[in-house]
Each structure stands twice: as C-alpha cells, then as structure tokens.
Length: 158
Image (cartoon, rainbow, N blue to C red; front, side, top):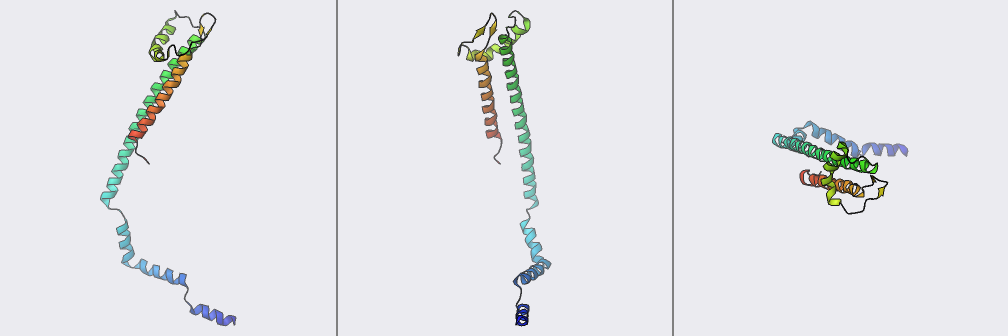
C-alpha cells in the first residue's frame, strides 16, 4: 500500500518544482530583461535625482553653518553675562578696567531685564544679579527658537 502511495506521489506534479521550472524558462527569454529595462529609471531621471541630492546637501551645509554661527554668538553672550554675574557676585573692584569693560559690554543685553527682580546683596560689593541670570535663560530660549525656525523654513522634510 505504501508503494502505491509513492507511485501516486511521483506521478502528481510538484507545484513548487513546476513554478521554479517556469521561472527559469522565463529567465532565459528576453521578457525578463525587457521587464528590468522598463523598471530601471532613465538616465535623465537619475541625473535629476543626483542634482537634487547635491542641492539638498549644499542647502543643509549652509543651514548648518548658519546654525553654528548663531549658537556661537549665543554662547559668547552667555559667557559675557556669566562673567558679569561672577564679577558682581564675588565683589570685583568696580574701578577695575576689566570689570568696567565687562559691565559696559553686557549692559545692553541686561537692560531689558533690569528691575525685574531686586538683586540680593552680600556685604559691601557682592551682588547676585538675578536679572542677568534670567537674561541668560531668555537669550538661550530665543536662540533655540530661532534655530528651530531656520530648520523649519530652510530644511526640507525627510
């Protein structure tokens, strides 16, 4: 009985084998090559895509340079305001030329925040400038918003 089943199985065609044979037959013919040629993009389309990629890479490089410059300026401003806080907190001599230079240079950036809070004093010349600290945070937030806006405007969505 098992011999009869084996003979029947041998006589029935294997669907996977038949499918493989058919696909091999089609591979040998030119229809598959023609299908590949039709599915490949034209040279003009490839050229357009490459030009587009180059344009996007150049735009991205320019935007990144602008963002780096903005972060550099914001970092320099943060350092300047931190120096002001440090000098005032540790009671630097207000007659010292370096202290005068830092105070005068940082004054326009602290001016919008003057009188927002009263600055606590410790001793004769030690002042903790809360307003300068708030200015650092505000300028950092504005910097972040400007950078996000630049990315939204000049960077294409992925």
